[in-house]
Image 1: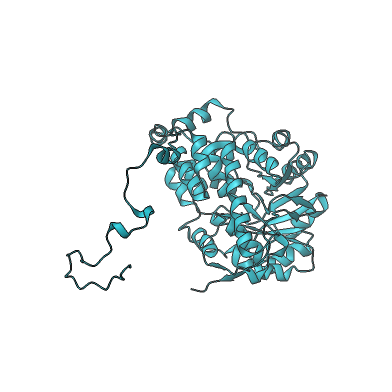
Image 2: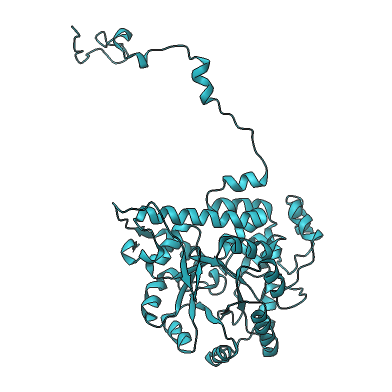
Length: 432
């Protein structure tokens, strides 16, 4: 008969005399010498992979792509991408806003299939985000706009070429002939040059014109000042020393076609000087009326930071608004786009105007939160540039893959299978 062991009263450090011995242990808990047949299935040693493509595959977040980008890119172009204006308060707040989201999941829903597609400005997008316009993109990595537009084409999402992009409108259209290409416009003091760009964009098949209105003057991007950032990067003692740690970037930069632009053939100087000399600080809503008459496709206004201005631009013919503070790169302490989404969405309800969010997105969960609060679509800027700097076209593809996987998982965990099912009940903004 098996006896039940009684609680031991042995002093600490001594082995109790009434604990069952090995004789009474289950067979699975008895010590034995392992057999090779038992070990063989466990011995799955992989050959170490040190290639950049392997590192891209292992990256599971945009932050990891950012770390790769920082290691591979000289300080000046990396900081131009990564930085913001003045003390960079706006950028930190924009990202904190996403961190302050609390999701409210629904349970016992069939989420075996999640559909991330959505309609934006009259056409379908396979994912609820597109690539935002970014200037001087081939300076970050030599494939630049070509990598971005081709990755967007492959993913079935829109790509936006900046006026200050480093590839021409025609070359981007040729590189991604089946993609949905948009063109972002900065209105210049020379209206004839602006009109020329608009006409070129239309001829190249761009269906949407995105006019940016938050650059009356250049923001104080202090990282660029400290780094002596110029277009193109200057070969100073500092940059040569920096190049010694990142030879691949400099090799690509020096052995490819020099930087050319969507809107001008060459430029040498600082970014701030370029903005202050070429962009028109006298813009008014009358200029928006002129654009509406001139451009026959969809017209979107980027840089909306108040509900009142959102209403006004729609009254002046805009088909959509991009709630954006330019990634925190213009006015520090500017409004946080995510916080504005519910109010702008409510104000434009019934107008058929698209509400698009830009600034601060670093994960697919961020995108889901924006959609739940009322945005119809989002744009990624830095997130895609981190991927570009980390690995060219393959890095941009990896950015899109990470965001897509994030979104599908987040929606499934929320109990949602379609973008249209997301609503404010799925999120709550935490209060500090």
